Image (cartoon, rainbow over all chains, first blue to last red; front, side):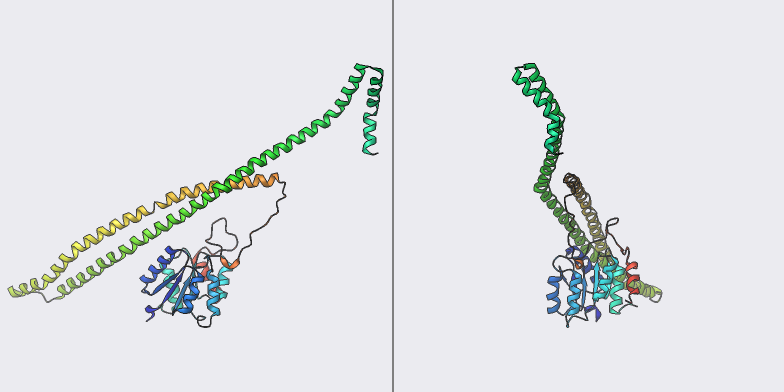
Length: 127
Length: 253
């Protein structure tokens, strides 16, 4: 049943969205929707029935960190699993993201194995 | 002593000599006194001229720097912006092209693998059969093998076509990487411009004698800093996923 999970992938670069979408597809998750920044993602999250959010940090409009804070502040979305997938790698940023309530943090460039490992860990689908 | 009394001390006698010579109608005495006074003024005049020349030189330097800066601001910066945008477009195009080819090759490889698996199973099942004996046994074995042969006949040409297509796709992926050369050249030219801008602004700051106030751009902390750049990014940085994992598990995640 977990393979029917509905993902929202938020990244300002369409190539990165496509890469993530392909990797998710390879992992068996084919229900993937895209958004290009927090501002477009938030209403989609509020309107749609997404099960999982994967977001970049550095985006024009609304950065990923602000999106996560908005998601955690929204009663309906506060429990949604969130994976941050970003090039931001400063120690204080990772801590900030953890405090904002991410469930996982993957730095770019990343591997398919890392993505799988974090998804499994968050979803409890690993061995 | 006031400035004027200094002047009186320095010039008084010569002015007196001058007016006396004028009264006497002593032409050579008059000009000698005039020469003397002019001579006294010369060093100060030269110092003034030197100072004026220096100021003029500075103004000219400043003008040449500023006109170069104006040129850079007016033409080359917009140019550089257009070139960098072109770099983004080229990398975007190359990445999408590569992704297209990967997405098209994946199913071909998958199909070959799947059909080879089906064939292997069929071959395996055939081997598992009881050994054939007698004419009828052999005839039954041949009969049982026929579907395998037909499957093989269908599989091999498809496998060849698919593999050839994958090979062509890979060759195109290879070619798509040519963007690195082209974008590299463009980025290098922009680096040169930034370097020139840096020098011109540095010279201007020096000419202004440090009158320029240091102002730093305000940064929105939640906006992010972008990818880590070795040697540029400051502060403690995670260099690999293991660093992130260690940090987060230290935080109890």
